[in-house]
Amino acid sequence: MPGPWSSYVAIGDSFTEGMDDPYGDGTYRGWADLVAGCLASEADNFRYANLAVRGRLLPAVVDAQVPLAAAMKPCLVTFSAGGNDALRRRFDPERMAEVFEGAVDRLVSSGAEVVLFTPPDVTVNYPAASRYLGPRIALCTELVRRVAKEYDTHLADLNADDGFRDRRMWSIDRLHLNPAGHRRVAHHVLSALDVECDAEWMESLPMATPARWVTARRADLQWARAHLAPWIGRRLTGRSSGDTITAKRPDLALLADHHSPAAPPVLSRQHREAAGPG
Image (cartoon, rainbow, N blue to C red; front, side, top):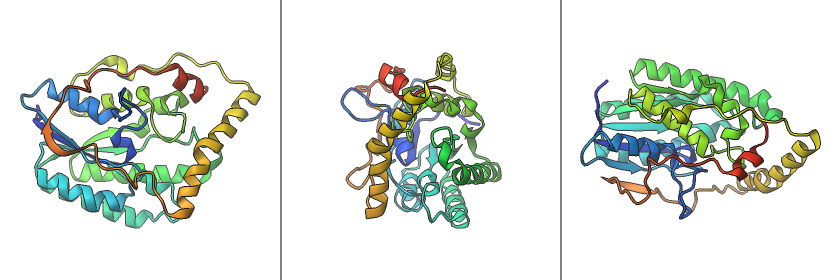
C-alpha cells in the first residue's frame, strides 16, 4: 500500500475521540492522535482532522462525519463506529451492515485509503451480559472483516488480540480504553499501514494478582453506581454523553505540536488498581 500519507481524517465515536486517555488539560489524546503523530514524522506539512464525537451511533457518524471526511479528500481515513449501536436493546444487524458498507463504499470512492477495525472483546468487562453481547460482537467482527476484504481496506483486527481481554487495558468505566489500551490500538493501526512505531505499545502488562472476591464485588458495586447507573439513565431519557460535545479537530489542518501526540502516555496507578485483575 502507498505511503507516507500527508493527510489523515479520523471519524467515529468515543473510541476514536480518545476516551479515556487524557492530556494534562482535560482533553483526550487516544490512539488516533498517536497515529497522527507517527505519520507526521514521515511526511512534511502533515494535516490531521478528528471528527469523532462520543456517544454517536453509526447512522449519526455516517450522516454527519462521512460526508465531511470525503469532502476533505485526505490520503487516509480511519473509520470505526457501531459499538454504541451494539449496546442498544433495539440493535438491528441487517440495518447496521447496510449503513456500514455504504459508508465504506463512499470513503473508498473518495480516493482515500481506509482503515477499519474489528471490535475488541469487551465481554471481560461485562461477564453478566456476555450471553447477548458476545454474539453481537461476533457479528460485528464478521461484518468488518468481510467489508475490509471486499473493499480492499486496511484492517486493524482488534478482536483477534487477546491483549484487550485484560481488564487493565480498560478505563475505570469499563467501556473506554485507558492509555495502555490506546497505545495498543495505535500499534495495530500503524502495523496495518506498515509504519514502524514503539514496540512497547504492544507489550502485555505484568501478570496481575487476582483480587479477593469481596474486593472484586465492592469494585463492581462502585462501578455500577458511578458508571452503569448514569449510562442507563441517559438511555431512559434519550440523552447522550456527546450531546454538548463537538469534534476536537474539525478541520484538516497542520498537526499542532503543543500536545505532543506521539509521546507515549503512562498507565497511571489509578488505572492499574481500578481495572482489577486481568
